[in-house]
Image (cartoon, rainbow, N blue to C red):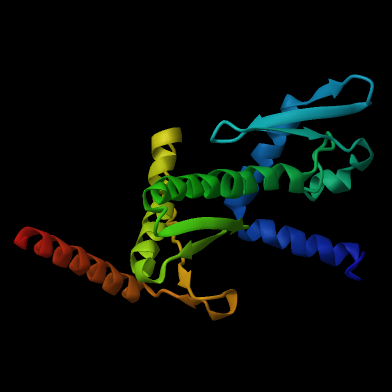
Amino acid sequence: QHAGLNKEFATQVYQTFWNLFPTARLWSDNLMKLLDINAYKIEGEGKLESWYQGITGRKFFFKNYPEKISDFCSDNRIYTPKGFKYSEGMNYQVQSFCTADIHMIAIGNLFRRALKYRDKFLIINTVHDSVLIDCKLAFREECAIIIKQAMESVVCSLKEKFDIDFDLPLKVEVKAGSSWGTLEKYQEEEFKKVAQNVINKYKNALNKLSKR
């Protein structure tokens, strides 16, 4: 209604999406059926509550919308037959795994690595899925490699902590600059050069030590 579309056209767009992604449709239907199966009454509220558990063990609880129970809502996957909202049920499962689990594990991995280099760089803040770091200019190349390696190791952490085989590549983009407006992205080829520069730097340092 807010978009100025009629119900027939909106329904067509909605159904076309699910027809294009049948596996996502099966996953969402099974997840929402679980909410209806797990539903129980809330004393004194006249509503139902339900829950499911994510793959990392996190539990999510939902209340239903009894006033939204209708054939149209259930047929078009807006609300389940017992009134649980599709967008809530699906979003919490996906968003929590991405932002509350994967991202925070990556931040934890980086934080533990960063403790060894507090004289060279510091984690200042996080903004959504970005991390702001204050780094000494002379250590910029080493810092870029540490950030990328630490945060991309989240795939190994998921296997180690939760036995999750996560086969989707999780790439970390690193930008550097003196301010937000001057940030420039490190390209993949640059990382290879940076890595080689760091290796050469430490080789030279070791050679100097061995000659003493």
